[in-house]
Length: 299
Image: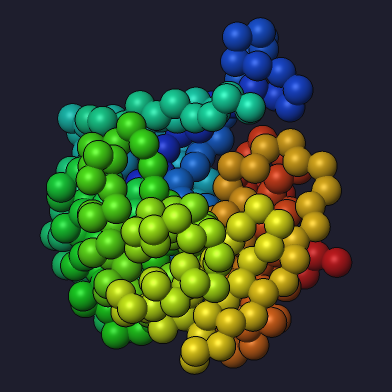
């Protein structure tokens, strides 16, 4: 089977209160799954692309549930490893307050380059890894580098800078090694400024040009009300108009899925931006990272 995209990264069990409630007062929490790369894979699969996801999960019920959910979306998980000693990671989402991670000793935290041995990396049209994988452990960081080095198709990176992880104190340096190996960079403006040490500039176009010096050929910069792309030396941008937001977590992953799908299908940058903005907005209407993502045949 030929894949449109192969992604590498950790997926966790995600617990969150129902909309309008808090972890402290909700009588029950909703259970879901969440991970930057797998969220994007769900979006791509719903848009009709052929995707595979590589990772490690605990040999536990949480890991079973994640595999069931991703397989139900049509995502190929044949290369996912199960760990009988280490658990599947956990995250608790508190709307308005952020996310708390429980993943320091998770199965994915020791995911090394050997996980790629049987996977069809070179044959895939594109690969995806985010900065989260660079930050959860030394072995995952090495695996992410190996994925990008072995790829022969489009190499895609989202920096996804995070605090509270193994490598967070060195996050710009660790994630920059991914950026230097990628073709398509999808980044938020603030994290891009940190990555390129832009000296205080907030201009997205200038940030993109600084990032281009690291190697990427196409740089997408997401800001609160505007998104732009630098490609072939030209900068173009569009405004974003958002409606009511229940939970913005996962919107960046959905945005990425819309953009990647359009570009892999030969769409223009303008078409890809339109698709990305629509997909990003779709997931903000619920507390799930993926439930609101549209399917290809949706009106």
